[in-house]
Image (cartoon, rainbow, N blue to C red):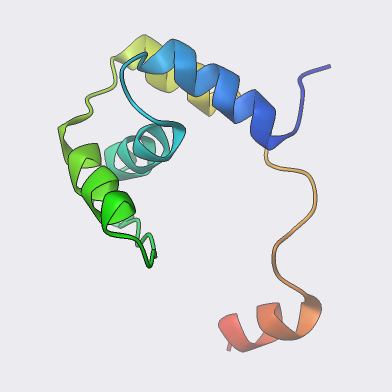
Length: 89
């Protein structure tokens, strides 16, 4: 069974781009999915803004993308039913 947790993504991101943070890998992975997906990270810290900007320079090879794509969806949801209904209107 493949692990379904933030730790699984963290471990895969370490393999994908050793010199990048998991957040940078996540942004690069989403950006590589196509022009229809635009990650919008939020932060209150200047260091995180700089980290997010640096994510633009992270390039993932096809095999790295495949590793990340092979992870199962995260277990659970950050949204509740009410939030989902508002989104799906």
